[in-house]
Amino acid sequence: MSTAPDSFRAMADTFEQALDQVDRRNTPAGVKPVIATTLNTLATLTGVTGQTGYVTADVTANNGAYVWTGSAWVKFAVASDVSAMRQWVKFGFRMQNDASFAGLAYGGENRLLYNAALRLIRVELAPFRSTVDVGRYQVYQPSSGTIKPSKSLSIGQAILDGGTMGRELTLNTNGTVSVGPEIKNGNLIHPLPNLIPVPSDVTITATGGTNN
Image (cartoon, rainbow, N blue to C red; front, side, top):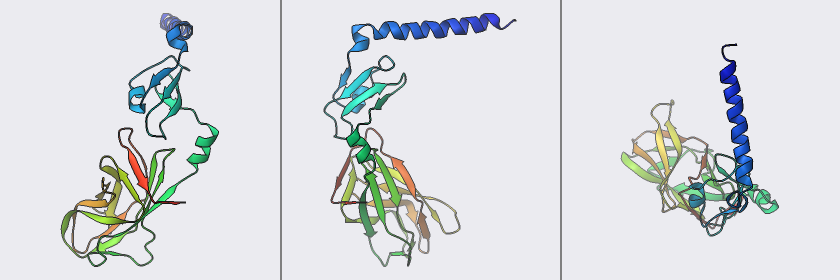
């Protein structure tokens, strides 16, 4: 029974926290919604568990109603959001130079897919063989539509033939995709398929893509 006092104390603390939540919900501050112009601003605020928050003047995907879970703001899903969550937009890419960066026959399609509602980017870039020695280079150029982050965005890794020494993939603010930190003559580079969440401090500008 030596642990009983600790157990009783923990139980009392739990009841006290629950009663505090109820008390706070019954105050004006706990009832009225938390309003913020941007999602970044809302993220700096807290509420009572179950309290509603609203983002009013951010990018379209961020605007709307949220609920405080006790540790974070989670957006309410409405019918239009559920429909949008199924929508991926495809952006095609080509090699910057087919002689320097030769795509493999039947290597697959070069593309990024973007879901604005979920703020996710799917990376599906085909492997290529390099015939040049260069540093970090913008190997993949837009060919259909453009997807541009407000800041350079890491979108995963590529591996060399045999699985040795990775290379980083970066989606640049001009819509190109760089491979680096270096590329060597003879490298066979395989970009890995990936699913990248867009950070809250990055804005995506996407134009001309096709629904997928």
